[in-house]
Image 1 (cartoon, rainbow, N blue to C red):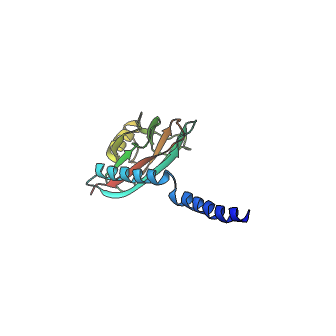
Image 2: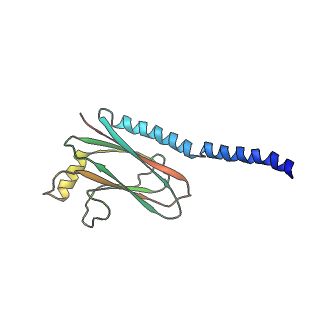
Image 3: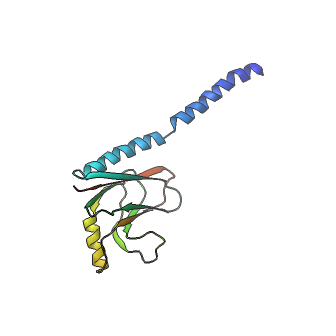
Length: 167
């Protein structure tokens, strides 16, 4: 029994260590998201890079909603690029002027069937649409992006948002 224990213990420890270090598919997904982030940066080339937000999710048996907020407090023109190439489930992207808990929020722009694509938009487009819906409104100081994610096979996926300011 002691010989079996001496042989099995190092093997078990080694297998556990390999499992912890490898991280499974997460490393591969992060590498893919990094590549998509670079693609998005190319889409807004000529702007001063301000930031990015990567939203990870696991497509499960039920639909889910993820919300992010981006501040656009400078008067400059913001350019946005979104990559959903690592999203295989049905996806709708909605852009609002206020958070989800605000009953009076206004839908500014919507992208239906957005999965598997690269998308681009700017604050000029958003502000024009916003003022068309609310004529006495001031420009947007922040935007709230809502990802409506459909059901799927339980795979881990992601959406990349990159934004910059025109000089």
